[in-house]
Length: 275
Image (cartoon, rainbow, N blue to C red; front, side, top):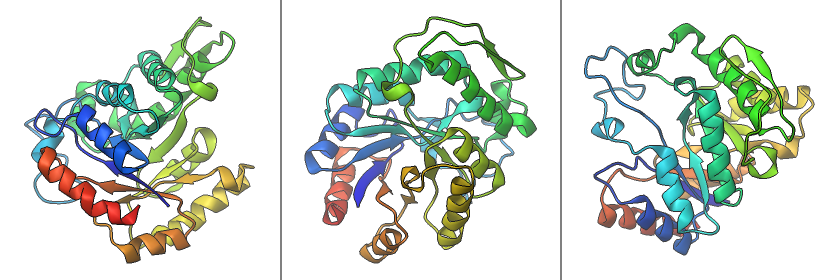
C-alpha cells in the first residue's frame, strides 16, 4: 500500500518546499493540499466536521502555487489537490493551471476536485448553490475541450470556449481526476463520466459505498482495474490500514497537522512505520 499525505499548508506552517523534500526522502507517495480562497467572517454554513471552523481554513496557500514549489524540488512525489473547488474557478483559466502544473511536473499531478460546503465563499465567486454540482460537471467539458489534441469548441450553460490553440497539454491528455464528496448518486455519476476515482473519508460505511461505486463504474463500461480509491485517513493505525487493504485499497492519504516543521516532521516519523 502506498502512503500519501494531506495537509493545510498556510503562511504559518512548514513550507511546501521543505515538506515535499521530506516526504520524498522518506518514501511517501504523494502530497495533497486543499483550497479555500477566503472564509467570510459572517458565515452561516456549518463546519462539516462539527464545532468551530479551524483557523487554517482562512489561511490556506493557493494550491497550484504551493504544488508548483513542491514539484520543483522533487522527482517522484505525486502532487494533488484535495480538493479544488472547481465551481469557484473560471474553467478556461483552471484548464491552463492544471495543464501547466501537470506538464512541468512530468505528469505527477492528480486533480482532486469537489463541490464545496461553504455557501458564503461560493456566493462571493458568483456560484448559485443549488447548481454548483452541475457547474462542476460542465466545467470539465470546457477543460477537456482545451486539453484535446485538436482545437475543439464547447458551448454550455456554465461555460463556453471557441476552438482554440491551448498549450501545454496535460501529460497523457488529462491528469488523474479524483472526486471528493460524500457517497451518493451525483458524485458517483460524475466519477464514472469524467473521473478516474474517488477521494472519500475512511469511515464505517466505506465497504458498502465502494461496492456501490464499483457496480456503477462497471455498469458504465469502465475497466474495474482503472478505478482509483484514495481514502483520507485522519487517525491511521495498522489495523485500520489492514482493513482498507482488504477492501482493495492500494493508496491512502494520511492527514498531517497544520503546523510548523518540528511538529510535522514528528508526525511523518510516526507515519513512517506504515511505509
